[in-house]
Image 1 (cartoon, rainbow, N blue to C red):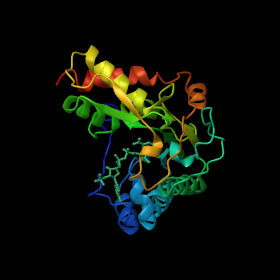
Image 2 (image 1 turned 90 degrees about the vertical axis):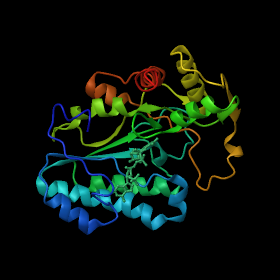
Image 3 (image 1 turned 135 degrees about the vertical axis):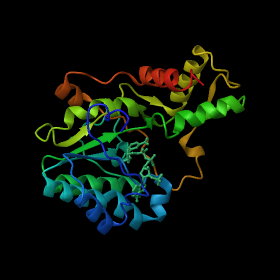
Length: 274
Ligand SMILES: NC(=O)c1ccc[n+]([C@@H]2O[C@H](COP(=O)([O-])OP(=O)(O)OC[C@H]3O[C@@H](n4cnc5c(N)ncnc54)[C@H](OP(=O)(O)O)[C@@H]3O)[C@@H](O)[C@H]2O)c1
């Protein structure tokens, strides 16, 4: 909303104002609102909880997006709905493209894929944007947790055998208006910062950026953990879920910047001032 407000008239709804598990309430509230574009970044994202709360996962991540798309149809508006790299099984070893077969291995991934399908079935003009490993201001993510731990502990570890790409929410928000027009790109689109890494490499880069920015940390290096060490995880996660942004680059003529540049930028903007 911060990115769009200078240029667009924007109304936002938080969880308390619009509960996606109350579909009747959603119909009433949005039915009474006028808009040209609806962006849905809300979801039930606790991957482990989705395994035990499947009904809730499917209601919020699958049914609700379908209802949002129907409401958009009634208003001749466009829905931009966020989805995830977790729709893939992670068996591939090259970046996943939009046309690759989705094959989720968790209830979260299944519910998100069902959400994509209900949005796309409602109309050609709606856009599903799959993103991966988001980070950015306002909502602490993995990178913030790692920096916090490195401020407190001399030794920190992260998983070194799981691959995807960190993606800056600022970059997502910046690229999105290119797709606000109804006629522009419906269907599925991947958007991730460029490159790939493990969580260990991601955390190490964040610490290196902090050091360059003069932010004092107790830990200097990030040790390695294996996926098999995560015995408390309930859901399976894809080992490799790098998204190819080639279609995005071809549509817009501007490939996303690298994840290293994006993380460095985030740390400069959000940590250097503190
Ligand atoms: N984070 C990632 O790395 C990642 C990776 C790939 C794809 N994605 C996708 O990107 C989108 C945004 O993810 P995120 O990481 O920003 O998720 P998040 O941090 O978990 O935020 C989700 C938001 O949805 C809200 N929400 C949850 N249940 C709701 C409900 N029943 N009704 C209305 N709002 C509800 C949450 O509110 P409360 O906090 O108040 O419950 C929160 O504001 C999702 O579609 C997700 O699947 C995220």
